[in-house]
Image (cartoon, rainbow over all chains, first blue to last red):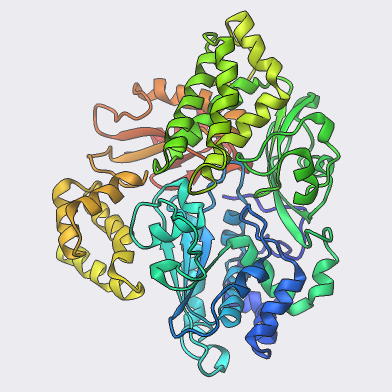
Length: 430
Length: 153
């Protein structure tokens, strides 16, 4: 059972309450007020509000959600599609699971608002197959919406506002979190990302104009519509407004999710998790899911928003904060990271398919004490040859964390090569 | 494929703008019948979806949650990604391996349990964890893991 956060904001305020998942309790807490206000406006006004709210997509890339909505073609007879990306698979990220399990109606209200704004008549909620409980929660919530005529035809009595919602289960593939990989998968194919352009707004799911947003992104929308842009911008930073659910894991006293304004200093985020376990010293922190380069203790006061993290060579990504204490062998971390990307590469592009395998082989060789100086050179060259060379950003995601580890913890790699063994006997087991 | 499964699959078609969208859910339904989808079942699906058998086969083999060979009666998967590994998942997995007498990826001789490892399952705040027949068992130690595993028939 997922642990409900004890640091809450507008999003997770009622997550401790099981009933919040039912329509009556959700409405009693102000649910569907945002949709009501949206439906009283022209769709274009809703898009404008979302644009000026500056809500950045919470799936990792951080693109302005309202801007994304505005890309949908206006003069077309083709049916339009919304896709909600619930394929959360980024290692260290577990916030979408919480939202699906504790606030499914927030997501659905966000989807209905977006459907009105972009004129979509079909919505798919793609949830990773392993997320059985989230799938059950969303299916139950969708069923309740149909029963209450809050989706289907003439939603909330609004003539001509028709939207069907389908919950769709993935089947275990990290790459299906990439938006065009997801679309391929939704079409019943291998989840291999598409070349862009054309972008999903022109040619998306089943060839139809499509907008894809992350679970958390949709969940914020009702609050923006209900309480207004100024209220929303009262949280977070100018470039990254609102709160987010930081997920803190690894070597901390109390791992968990904490809803805090974007831009909260890293030290404070980790502090909510009780700090580094056992009073040990901090060695490194991955700030935004495993694809993002690592930070060192020197960065402990960085505000956790993308504009500040990018100055330090990394990104906020999904806000999954992985903490590593002084016992940690960073070559072992490189082994785990590179194994993951090797395992999950879809195999479509040569640089990625081959590069991820080579990086993993080299890291394991170094960890086993069989590495040479030539391997150090290879660990610089191979990621550089992958970055920016492939159809999707997966190869970047595989290259960046290795580059970060090499940049900040080169000594760990060198020590393995020099001593022909791992110098961290107390590190986590591999 | 049983008539009932076929019926369920046909009911899925209308949910998608193109029939093929129902392929993943259909594979789940066929897999629920006997635990895996072999090449005969893949051919049957191909015919139903008006696809080539290879179209179905490549989908089957792309995704981790589809099985083309028989599995144990129960699935036990331990997450070994970084957040879980930092909290002892690899040691846990080794303990389970010696308890069951199989390596990761194998099935016990009596066909009772298939043991595997998986990449991040979104349980980083409750690590380490395992997935037993699809359900999450979290905040684990070896004693609790053995207790859960020994309780499987």
